Length: 255
Length: 255
Image (cartoon, rainbow over the protein chains, first blue to last red):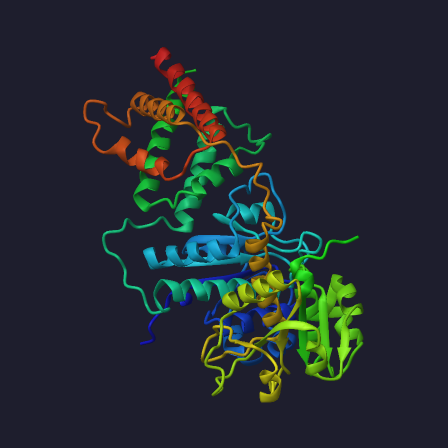
């Protein structure tokens, strides 16, 4: 049986790529650095002979690519996601750079033996705010401010290079054994269910007007995105929310 | 007059490139990292509309490219040259990696105020032994041994990225992320007041029996202790708790 290395647990997710050539370039870039899990969210054209030509000797990565209908779906089952973003956004103050982000991704993957994701947006429009909100760590490549527009394949190459270096630094890229005593991390889906619960409780309390949500949920996502929530912690937080829910329901019934 | 930065003194030399698309990709990769001196040794086709298309917004780098008849000519006037090579050669025992090579190139450039060169060979055949002999430092990108063949544009992107990082590290040159806008962290007292508030809300909700507190608050402290809460986040969290408190108080008054 093939030994699963840390790099095997990294999903490279391209969200809504417009140009099949870039999908091929991404596959080639991944394989040169030892990555192989390519995920495509609603690609404009796939499969496509242009992608195959650009993939060169990485046709196997392309052939094994997963196609998903949404970023949510592509992240399902992962324990951590980093997202590439060139733009400055109000809430992305905790942005990381490629080197630090690669170290963090590999650390997550090693500590949890879970899958992690590196998400790239559309060539022209990048990632939507909603897509960014699904990822814990925004990453910005330190580019020339006068012309920061890296080609998608080049950005994938650069990030995969940093991931390979991080994997080599952590342990030769060999399979990492699970550390039994570490608490089990929450999955992406569990975290999303927590956010949905939190949102509905806050709306019920009247603190958040769902018609005028302002920036509240994005801020809370940023806060909890930094924590690496554990499975048990999600259970506790949702227990607390449920007890608030029950208290408030009680109140409404009596009014 | 434009200030000549350290990156302006780096020549990116492509020796005998076969595909004009790769010349365009290299120009784009260079410009995204703030480099602009492109040198072409006996290109198969230049200028070429395919190169222009792939250069995207880096047409100026392409337009300013120098065409030379030999590598010797392209290196004339430089004080140091590094050469990319994927293959092991008898004489390349002192091979460097991209990070160390970038640091060395920038160091040479800074110490001498002279020009330095980074040389890439033909897509299929790489650099000849004679060409390698003209360069002081062979550099190998740490690629997947099973598939080490990076696209030329991707290799240029990766090396220019390392050069930019090296220049930033040496020069106190523009740090690309604004530092002044970092959010203000919460003080110890603010965090403690939040925990006290959280505790009393949870007791009020009935989720925590203050006579039998179990391990709940220590767990929540561990969770929020990992986050490095910001001042504004404390305000938001306490606002949410207050709205829960109000909802539940309402309920109790009516009982």
